[in-house]
Length: 252
Image (cartoon, rainbow, N blue to C red; front, side, top):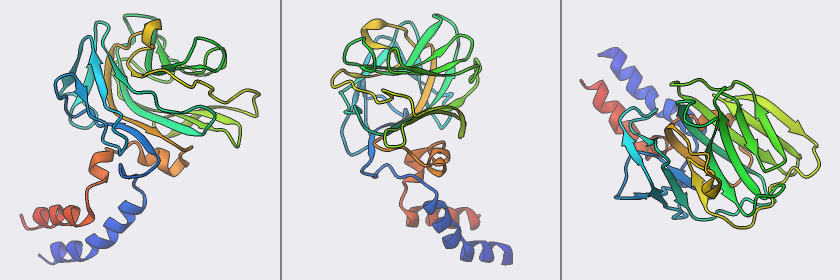
């Protein structure tokens, strides 16, 4: 009983620490967030403030084998189409959990946005069958070799800081590759749907599971990169609700 009382008294301090390290889906810089926990018909709801809801095209369904609860399962050419999100000539970070099959096509896109297929105007982030992860702008690409494995969850962040002229790929919270000071490192596309699970008309459909898709309007800090690995919806629960949950567990 004494242990439970001490734990409860200390809980608010632990919660403050947790909240200080957590991202929030109410953050103004969160441009899109798919928690992948539900489908409303063919609609994937954007839980950010921007209402960038996605529409399922082809075979995409919910799986109970998500990284957190459920996940979006892509097979047989399925994809999700969301509205154009302005990412041109600015810093941004795109993070998601993937569980790839690494079969059914040598190059499979997890996120893309195409103005035209020309240098720096076609954003395409894809996985090769050998596990290599590519951050591509078309003719201006950055590869993280053998970064993911078939049937295993991996957290990927594609990171761009236009002021520092740096581009990075993070896997499971760790920076794997960087190209710095490269001329023409900015993404320049000014139109095109935001696609999850394909490269739009170019194809390259993803085969596997995707969870917790986040698009941020800034280059996240390394601390925030690690925080993005958690379930954002759960991290955004009001503090008092979290304390009530903790107290309920302590009483039993």
